[in-house]
Length: 244
Image 1 (spheres, rainbow, N blue to C red):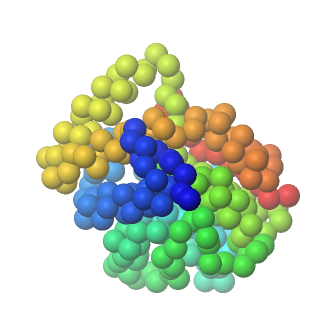
Image 2 (cartoon, helix red, strand yellow):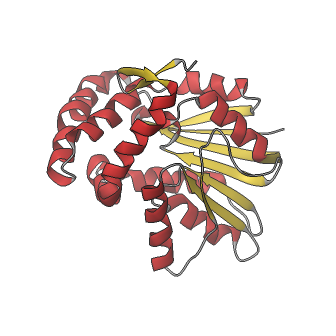
Image 3 (cartoon, rainbow, N blue to C red):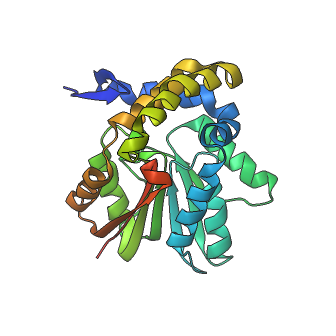
């Protein structure tokens, strides 16, 4: 029997969450990049640039980008890995995966890709030097299972990077809440004709583990040397961990 999990503030069956998340991203895929720029005032580019710098991808490395979305991280990782490296893009959502693939192809870059659930990655043990997931973990039904899978496919010494919305600095919370629950749905309605999906995204951030809770989840998944970096006063945090 399926247990219950959250879809934003709503309680749903575990088996239903993946379908509902897929509906959200089917709806927002065509406006995904524009909305990212508008919602974050372009700050998502700085958050991703910091992640890319911390990842430190070297020539010849194997990299897996989970929940790749439109492929921003994968594009940069491919430059670092070079012609002898291997960078995979994956997503559970076909519309988002196709968007990422098409953006890369438009730039003359073809990367291997797989549509898959992060809780069941179709890769061998101890394969990748680096695994990343940016703004995708909070949408996964069983985060602990997904983290364990990411650890499984890492080689010993490999690193996992999780970039995700987190807990903002407490004095900023009232303004952040107003922006999240008033401005974001309004933007969604005007730009993407979909206020509900962006309301869900705001709710999903509130339901996601905070910085310390996510650190604990990663440690429980068997990852070590877990640390995190708060960005933009904790609006976003980058967690880094290693498979020892």
